[in-house]
Amino acid sequence: MTQTQTEIVPEQDVPGRTRWGVFLAILAVPTLVVAALLALLIAWLFTDDSVAADVKETSCAEALAFGGAKLPQGAKDARCALEAGPAPSYTARFRMPRAEIDAWVAAGFPQGPELRTTQCGDARVDACLSADRVAGRRASVQIEITHDSRRWSEVRYKAFTP
View 1 (tube, rainbow, N blue to C red):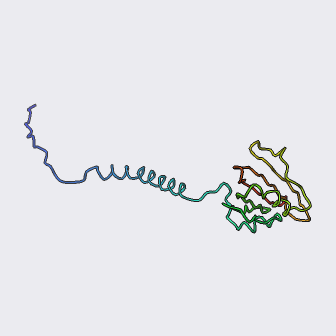
View 2 (cartoon, rainbow, N blue to C red):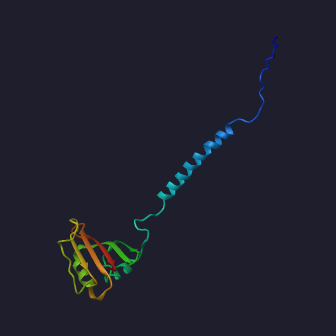
View 3 (cartoon, one colour):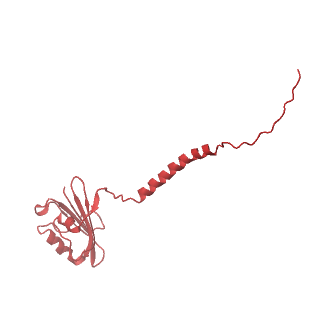
C-alpha cells in the first residue's frame, strides 16, 4: 500500500450566518417577560385601589342626612364617602368645636340616645353613640368622638342599613 499525500488547504473565511441571531432571539423572550412584569407592577402601583372597590366620595350633606343628622356649622376638614354593597353605608369624618358637640347630637337625635363616655370599644375614643333606627329612620348610626384639643374634636360618623 502506498500512501498518497494529501494537500492541506487552509479554510477560507466566508461571510455567512452567525449564531448571534439565535442568541438574541432566545434572550429577547425573558427580556420581554421582565418588561411586561415591570409594566404591570407600575400600573398596579399607580392605580386607585381603595380597600373596598365600591367606595366613592359623596357630599357630607347626603352622608349625614342618611342617618338623620346635619353637618355642624363650624365643621372643618369634612370627608364623606359612600360604600356601596347590598345595603349602602355612609361614612363621614370631620372636626368641630368641642363645645358644640352636645348641641349637635341633641339636634340630630332629639329622642335619644345620648353620648356616652364609657363602653366605646376603643380606649382612644372619648365619647360615642349607637342609635338603631331612631325616630323611624331606616338607618342605624354610630358616632365616635375623639378630643384633639381643648377646642376641637374629631367626629367619625357612620350611617348604615342593618
